[in-house]
Image (tube, rainbow, N blue to C red; front, side):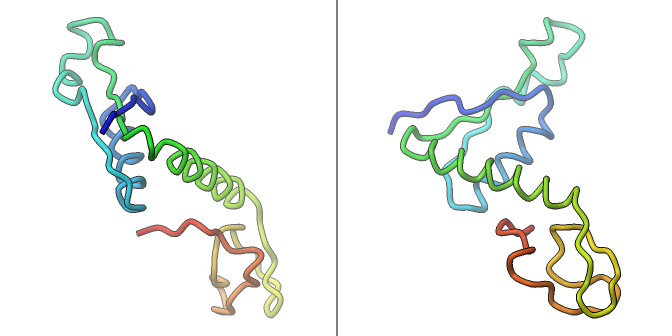
Length: 114
């Protein structure tokens, strides 16, 4: 199985967040370069960056996940008024934070936190 570098990150945390999202969706992720990150400042910074690698056949699905994540991020930046109590909710909420009413499905995110 041929693996390809999918992305490069400045911190282990950024790479691990992305890897966790992908693994949670069933992708086979490999994080490389974590062992060099403590050497930041001692060696050139680009040498301490962390890479996320995937099998080449899973790259398209990973791109779809990132697009979905970006869509969810944009939804969170908007506000949605609850039809029952008129309270404003972040656009990515499934339930009204005030009254608990289920918001219409068209306003819900497709990507869910795990």
